[in-house]
Length: 322
Image 1 (tube, rainbow, N blue to C red):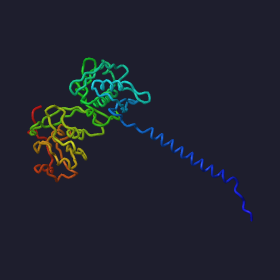
Image 2: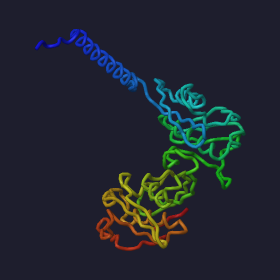
Image 3: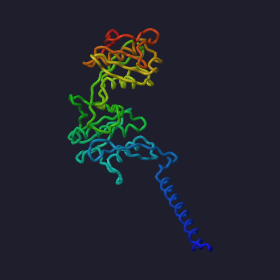
Image 4: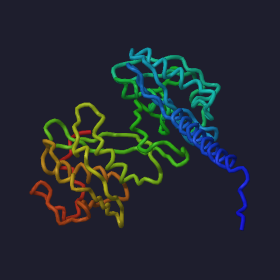
């Protein structure tokens, strides 16, 4: 029986080859596009900073990378501020300042950058003003040597809710990254740090902006770990300590650290780290006693002298003057 011949076998083979070639070209285009989206490496002498803007709903900040070779402090401050006041055309965001607010200039004094705006600054609503404050602090404290900003409206310093000057503001004042301004509140804390001798505790007043979902008790411990801001005061806790859990039940605050708590290498008396925590937490009306544990266990001895198997109460014998 005669076999039927397949028609145009050469055409079928060439068609398959063309398909493979097209597929290869398509993959090459996709790979090239992916490479083009990758961020370019920094050029020699170039640094990257984050400029903060505000979303259209006025609820969160948007960070936009900005690169420059500028190293002069005054020039860099002016450059970052100029960019903060003008949103890139391809970014869906808005400037953090109200249209009515006029930026009048700045002055650097040691590690504080004073920013001067006209009287309209205080006319911004609370949500926008908090975002503006955070954006200014986060953007400008990236400048080497600038640790704080201080905002003036007209000739007057920015005031807090109690009518007192807000004072220097750092990026760290905003404990968590600002993502939803409606979930943030400002809290006034009294924290206890020590002096160069490491034998007494001294109070430091501090105002922090934190997420309402983070307990004030945890914020206090976080701030103690971050260390003092007031000149002359020294830290009481090592900066590498991790907080595992903080809770309050029937006026007892339970603080659970990792093992780094036991490796306190600071040159302070044994009781200083303990009562730095206890006295700071006891400033809260809902805390009378404090239980400290390490990895969930209270059967631990701190510095071979202090058993953690106890409920600590405020002890003002170790507290110096205000």
